[in-house]
Amino acid sequence: MNSQDIEAKIDAAAAAIVASKRIVVFTGAGVSTESGIPDFRSPGGIWTKFDPEDFTIEKFLTSRDSRKKQWEVLLEGGLFGAVAPNPAHYAIAQLEKLGKLDCIITQNIDNLHQKAGNSPDIVFELHGNMQWVICMHCGKRYSTETIIEKLQSGIEIPDCDHCLGILKPDVVFFGESLPFLILNTAIERSKKADLFISIGSSLVVTPAAYMPSYALESGAKLIIVNIGETSLDNRAHILINGKAGDVMTRILEKVSTYLCV
Image: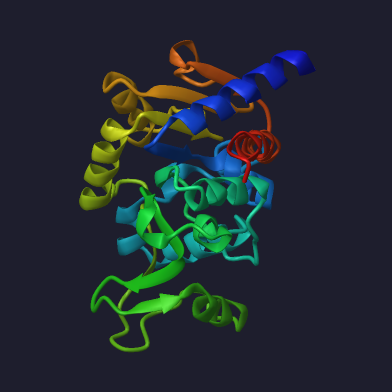
């Protein structure tokens, strides 16, 4: 795709945003990777080094060896590190400031949409949020910073200091269901969108990947921004192959021009 084609698509995407009143943004790992968080499923990612079958919720709850390994992997994955929002996050936050954004539905667990300025109550995290760790017995919540200190002090398997229960990152593990209320809300918001923008997702991990289909079936237009193919390329009204931060920044610059903001 040449630069003229990309520019035309960016213009079209900006025009669609200006014309829309209820935008739902869906984000996947391709947004987080631009903040330095590795994609677990891509070449060189965590799941090329470890077997995902060793990281199920059942093994986490029943095996101390599994818990030790999972804490090691979570640290290696960079999700406990000091990461910052990137231009894609800030562009999406700008949509909210312009009054165009209904909500964000995300597969990511890094809390970066909130850090970029989006209201927490419109960010629906289908797979949880790594900023919290929860006790599976008493429900006490810990900040990730507290758990990092424990791990870095040499504690291999942190336990709850209140009841000695098993601590687990407040995210969805293999074998766990997505949070029911959040999933249902995401489905309903997708169905009510007039424009659905999918950013940085190959749209293959279900049920999250069904969200743009719900929007399409309800009459919404679909914009896809991604590096590489997705499962819905043939149904997208506007398809832009490119880095999330670059593309979304350029789109929002056009939107601001059209709105004279």
